[in-house]
Length: 289
Image (cartoon, rainbow, N blue to C red; front, side):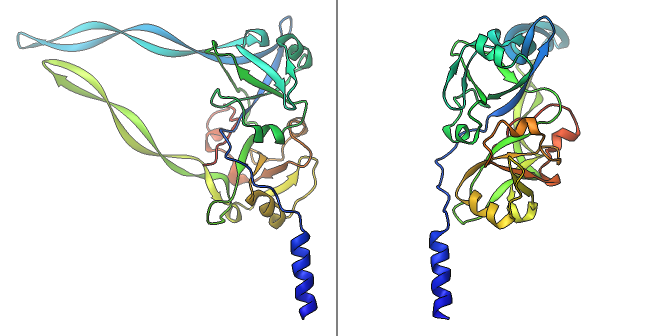
């Protein structure tokens, strides 16, 4: 019996232990680069713009309510398709090699993907380490207000997962969470009816951190090697970046080439984002608190 216990201890001590990762920022998005004949590679961007808006308000004069027109400045978001040169961004490969817009255009002349920061901040190095060396990353120029967005069918998402302080491992899965929204409320002040926005809480369906054992995802590496659930949990507990399917189906080969061969790929019907069933907008990133 002593020999058996000694062998178990030795086996445990020699097993590879994943290295913990430092706190990770927002997960970057995977964005499709399309090719337009005569133009070349293009991306969809959104740009904020301030416009004057005319609206009617009710005013009380001499005891009577009358309508008056007023104007106010509001910020609207415009979408447009631009070339990589006009995207307001700089480009590098995941292994740190800078690329000019022309070099990036050449690499993506047949189409492809960009890894785009979700919050306009530089992509966290932990995500870079999970990406294939030739994956192309975006960093926004300081004077740019444009944001590169995804379009098309739901794409796989990068996510950072790690066990919490109690050792519980959670991954993104269907659930609900509370959000704070502003609701317009009409209010009369000094004879003028004004609209004020009051904050209120609403429950929405979204991907939320869910125990791994409740989701039971199929786990493979990016090269298709099946990974047992316990082995996957052992790796993920210490903190790791994964590629997850957002449509419940196996991730297609073109996306798998964006990450390193040993990167874990998670697939489950419970990991399909609720919004993907309502609209075709792509969701390129999932943040796990």
